[in-house]
Length: 351
Image 1 (tube, rainbow, N blue to C red):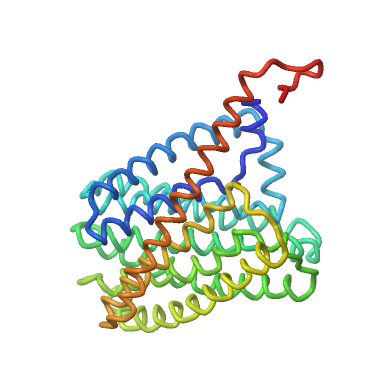
Image 2: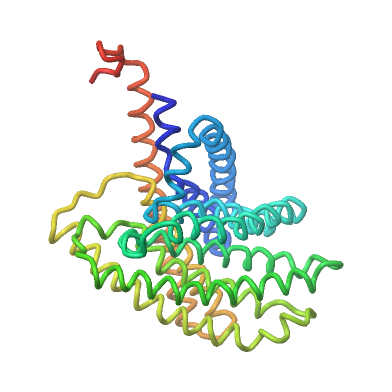
């Protein structure tokens, strides 16, 4: 069963690290250092465990990983590694661990560049266009989240990097700008998918929340860029980053309400049960990131009502994290219990 679990491991499971990292950042902003530190340790531990599991999968289950890369519905989940790496690095940078954060930035930025060329080619360009659009879903927006996570970490490290400030500022502005264009392109493709193919309640999975999470992290990246000082790229993008951040926050707020309505249609009206799966972490992350985005934008732009929205919304992110983590623990406990059951005649565990 262990081998089967690794073989079927979702490429998007690093969303757990993304969600834990941003909720930890939220709790730090709310002046709850002990809770924030506990979440940081959980996120770091989850990151280490997932690295081992994915290395195992790469060595033992290459065919399954190639299958995921060629599946438009799953391939973009690989970008959760990029985002998880950079969100964890951002949280560590806030603790003054700039050396470790810089290493994570190098890994995260390199993985984003690699996946940005590998994933679209493998999942889209090598197959029929109609089938590719049919596979478009909310996970595609993780491409945007990955790029913006690079921008956030680079901008966070910039003030303390005496010898690399210009390079970090340029990296932050470039990845922020590229990711904005990617958001627009992906939004068009996903809109075509919604219009051209039938969309039932079971198709509206939790990863569609990443459409809102991508706007939220774009706001966080923009506000972090506006806070950079002394670097040429930061000076050029200063005013633009605040204005664009306000546009993305407004659009993300509209999507937020639409997603709540869609969730009611899926689970209440249509009766689709809400069960644990790795995709739920892709719902927790946007909730936590929207709180951070609101707090950052309200502070930078001098909008107290936006700060207040963020201060309230972070608690929904924490609640979602607690519920999802509890559901994951129950799910994993069930798997461990199955390991101790006697196998039947076919070699499968009974019960």
